[in-house]
Length: 272
Image (cartoon, rainbow, N blue to C red):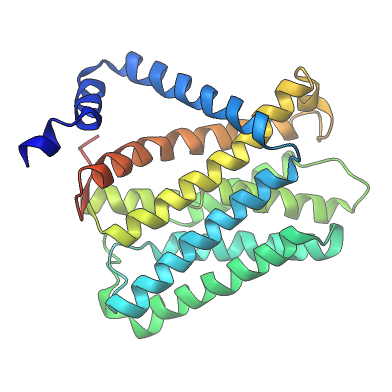
């Protein structure tokens, strides 16, 4: 046990934890930039970023399904996050069928079906283990601002304005859909392994999506910000939204990796 605690990896985490918030942010930004450079060198087709993002989301849902089937409990899971996920996937599927139709449509369809299955299990078969009192985020506080924002800021394409607004709505809902799950975990203080795996998969998914935006902006020297949009606000708005959510999930991913390396079965979240 002593050897495990004195390992170089654990010493590194201990050193990071002792640093100030400014140093932690600097280290996180440096690590992210290095990872982006590696991704830019390895990934030549930008579509692969979105495929990787959606694949990570699917894997996260599969982990949840495994938990529901084997553990017979949905404790620690946010029903509101699952419902928001189903909502943005349903809207995005409609937009995909009417506006594009490609590999993303297939992946979104798979994720939507799996998410609906999770919702049904939580609402009916396993509802006794659902901790509704911890899942306290008002869902309308997320939906209503997204509706207003999508009506004001949406992509400018040759498609109908209604479809463009729906597409923007799905993007905004996706960006904040994880908020109820994060809030539930803060309320619970302890996170079960499968729930942790799921949220970590969401973190990977969001990072891959954000990597696409950052690399596109870099390669176009910032011009990409103004290529598409209503009043030129669409791409910058989505970029900022992705950045904020990735930053929020980065904090969780740090404690997740730390707990996995330490061999802990439960992930504890320190008080904010």
